[in-house]
Length: 115
Image (tube, rainbow, N blue to C red):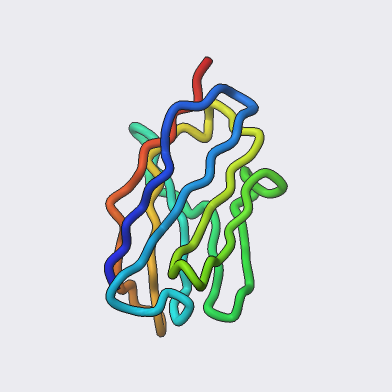
């Protein structure tokens, strides 16, 4: 499976963005898909995850603000990000795994939160 992440950009604090992780080469619904982010000088951290069965989980820092969802018809996983804060600024990556093995990483998309 190959992943293409997109949707990043510049947004003001309190604003919203929707990131997309589009897959090719395989059916994304068969995979557990995660969004990670990495801010400058910090380690990559898990933001949200959706299993092949549809179970979702979120980092405490984004609960209630971010929503991960599947668009199976588009073979895409989305990350809706609301009420963005400056500390959400990072490069966001999507990742697909199956049977405990990482199959692919997307190339990253930059989210900048600034007034």
